[in-house]
Image (cartoon, rainbow over all chains, first blue to last red; front, side, top):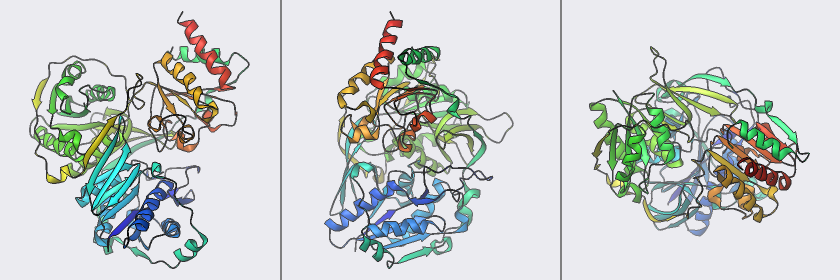
Length: 260
Length: 328
């Protein structure tokens, strides 16, 4: 049976006040989390493929702390068959390289024909994990899809790149990331929410995946934070109420900054 | 001196401004060496030479444009190996575009290196320190500056446009043609159609030094003419909020924000944009931010160096007239 795996991430609510911990990692416990909204678009596209083509199985995969299972349940309430939560204390502080190592190991264990992801996480937001997964799994990547169609073993997407609009074609198995341009994600129905509670969610450790704990987490990071400096608040900026002269005042400001 | 590879995408034969910024930054670390991709790469040589590229590698294989990302990764991997055996490789710098970040991450994995993305500055490390290269990033709505270094392997760093002002430093470069050996996997994702968007005659949004953006506060799509007029006076690119794009007022290719373009200009002028978190994610590292909005509670004012609370339909024409008057 062909399988789609949708990667989801449990991310801090962006409107919360975010901080660093003393070890230079982001304090992920300080702010309430949720299913990253950009991942909902990937779930929606996967559900549409499942509806259009018979026999596809849809599994969600996440890596993260205890709360991450909430993101899986939320996704399962939209639809889909099962979910896997990779959880291990050694994962704290993992960078994109380590994250892709663990997710690639989990994907290899699951087996897949198509991996769908959001365009980026809403927190770290580098947007490189899909490319790194394709590299590690030796399968094609197509990223930032704005439209997506699947037929037999071929995937075609259309995307807006920096200077052009492109049509890209590849064969499965492949890793594909989708943008919000693919369309709104559905809201979970009451029935969906009730049935999500009964869908199987497995928890895998690094030992289950055969990943050496020393190859992930903060200690394995290939980059190191040297300093973290809070920026002076921008509230020192001038704020004027227009009394008919604000256009001129703004021109004065732009002239002082040598923009005009 | 060890070389710093600077990745230059010359699809149309010209060297984009962010590449000239990278060449300027590269001089701080080692000898700038440009890797230029595209069948017309040779046309970019004179410009790259005047911005300090001591060595220029031309990779003219059409696969660089006809297939996604991996051909460039394989070419860079082969050039990096050649340089490491010769002068030595100090770092690889790329532009932090979506493609630049993907190439950088995949290359770092192949070189067994660390990767830093979205740097707003790059410098040589303190003499005697463990780190040859230090990158600065701006995070959490630009509320923190973080410096970091790659601790394993050759640093691979993707740098945001406008991290520095390009300065000329004429060289007589050594030009070398490179024909990389591409694997079958490199040709897995084919670009079957590419439609280059018509040029507006304005700077590229992601490269521009000045960006003037409009949002739903304009009230009407025709009001973007007012934004374009102001942008042209300032030599600026035109941006739009997601709300304005979703309403069909301006093309998606001009959207600034989390799901659109990320910009980091010297000046960002937000007009009729409330400043939702998704918009701020795309512009918060701008050096100077000004806004015009009628709502004094608009979150955009938390970021502004100069904010005007008022009717944009009065303030923008007044600003435009004032700029024209001052220029006589």
